[in-house]
Picture 1 (cartoon, rainbow, N blue to C red):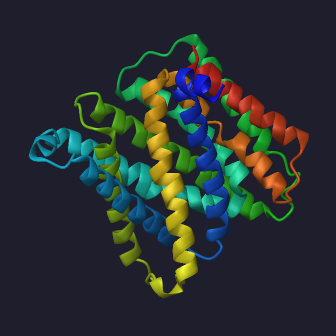
Picture 2: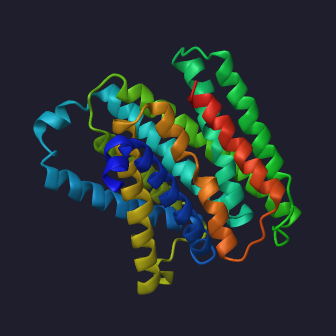
Picture 3: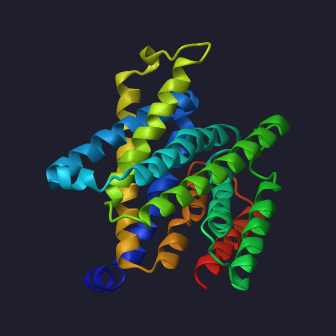
Length: 303
């Protein structure tokens, strides 16, 4: 039975693994965000992921003059910009939103990223959108609006934190969508390995974050990272960024892009049982809103 599923649904299972890894990591990062500022947390997990990606490329023998020759200026520029916008700003906004909204609502806001990416691709890459795509956009946004208007199970979230969290969550979705379109534009014109494109994006994003940290009024104090805290960050980055990216690439290799994207976007559904297990009360309205938002993503990509 297991072999049957692995043989016939390898891509779909990999996409679901991606969603599960990202959902679990968001809960952990939500707890870490109370001890580590978003900027420092983002730099830390990015550095771990860069080290792991470099190690993987070295072990695979993918660091060569032939590979580097494929990095033409246009491709490199697009990928670096993608990293600055999508990772440098997008991930920091994402962590800030988690601190204000919690993982469930923040991840639900991130379902805005696929329709936003579709709109940006239509404008800048001249991709046409069928009517089913617009229907998917409407359904997705409706589901998200339904959930974020629900106050049940979030009594500790003040009005100020709610507005701030929604703002940062929307900005994170916009940044991730922009970064995705920039990456798509780069990957469409070259045969560069996705691991290389991920490495370039991470290098640019983390470098931008490091520059940002240097300009802070209160300089980053890495002394606040205890060995235990560093271990938690490293392990979580391994699962969320390194393994998450690997599963994402596997899903795109073995399953149609629409199915892979849709299943990878089911993180909010994985978060709900996790936060219930942690003791948070989730209302029926929030659950139905989550289902509606994911249904919208399905309509958008499974057309």
